[in-house]
Amino acid sequence: MNPEIDALARLDAADREIARLEAEFKDRELLHRKLEEAKKAAELVLVKAEAAVVANKKAQSDRNVSLHRWADRRRSAVRALETAAGDPSAAERQLSACDAAIADDENAVLDLMLEMDARVAAVAESNKGVHDATEAVGKARDGFPAFRNVNLTAKAKAVSQRTSARSDLPRELLSKYDLLSTKGFSATTIVSDACRACNASVAPQMQADIRSGRLETCRGCGRFLLSS
Image: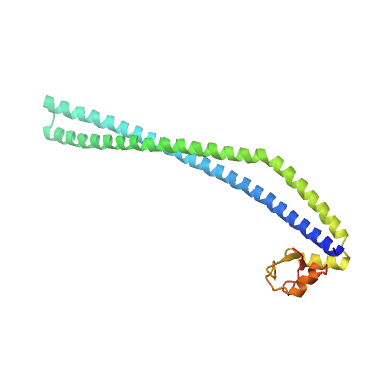
């Protein structure tokens, strides 16, 4: 094989491996951030669910206090009627008002008790969500050191291969490679008689020349064409 083509192929492979490993590392960091955000969101849901339980308890307490007050007033109205003390019409009106208020408070308490069941269930579900999110963060954190070591070791190897390949290329060819790399990968292959990078057609004769060891570039994007 043409030594320059061999060096280009090795350099391209090393650059692609480095890019893959860097993307993999960024993806892992992004996953960690998303897991942390999910954990914070789950914790916020739990805080809101617990606050709803507290609010429900307060509402029940307020209604029970109101219920006791109306019950006391009702007993006063009943005594007034039984003892014929005061205005019986006023006592009747007070009794009627008390009965309506008591019924309203009792219904409200029942509704709040039913609502409390849902609130408690929401807290339990939220606790599970926090537990699961915390566990996911822990697993990701525990596995990161090993992943990082593997990733960085592989990247160091690829960088070494890249350095070796660059040293085997003449300066003029290397300068063109670096210029092309500002727009992505500098080399590509031919797939179905076309450049894989830009899909420009590659003539059969050029393909034959490439297979025979001749260095060619794509007429469309200018990338070095390597034999697949």
